[in-house]
Length: 373
Image (cartoon, rainbow, N blue to C red; front, side, top):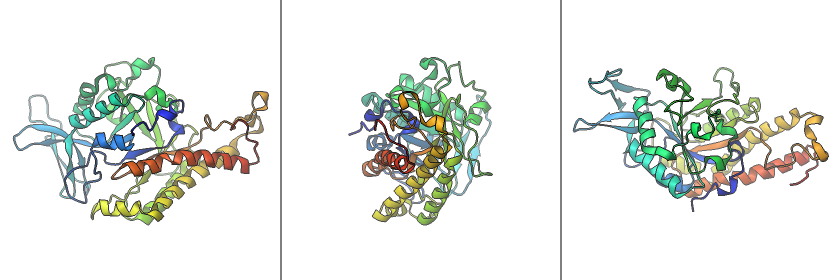
């Protein structure tokens, strides 16, 4: 079963909760401190993943040819060979540190899997986030070439800014959405609107490391804006504490901002999978839900408290906040995980039900009558 989004077609993207794969391209054989997924992109999508974190670099093969692959760095060192090489010169390529490693498939392989998935599952979308990439122009060209008509193209959506946060799920169905850092696209000299790279939307990271609060949300942003922060820890309790604190900062976000929660303990050393298995034991699955609920509840209560008496009522005395299908507030929408599988994804999708239950309960506790629920 892969039609996870068919029931949410009329929902805005910022109104649903769905799984994301951290270091999604690092699967297959490799060192246990490097490999973060057991399934390829196609199988991750079939399991329910809808957001994929990809870091791409160029590896030089033994025969002297080059290919684009996912890398897991580790140690903060990457050797960038022939950076800035001009056409006709030796191609730029990278070597990861001894603590890092490469994924199994090439970028072309992974994009082909994504394309085939949305073609076979027209109610679903996949979001590919490219960050910390090398030879980005080649990455962009490969996306355009391989994805073809399945790549979400905002020029074909009317030419207006495409704020993914408030787009309906149905309007994204059957597409692969590619996101890049705005600074990377600017460095390449790309015009975000009105030219051949119209499939290149951006991601906006709203978490401000200095203030621990949210940067300004832009309703005319071309892409997706989210608030969240990777914990960068190998300790489960430490990750739980850090994510709880980070998501608590969601109260400073615009109600249309999306949240990103990391349920990962990747670390630099040790067996990632063994730690990940512990994160999905009974007590820690409950911790995942507790962290998620804490972030959502704080933001929701803050939003309800900010509404004026005038806001609460609209025509025919119906509550402005009464319809749970249209209500929005900051939500940990994307839950990033390692070693994604069907059961983990189902656990995350079930948070949509929890979200509705919490909304009804909190509104009742706030003394607001619930009409039309």
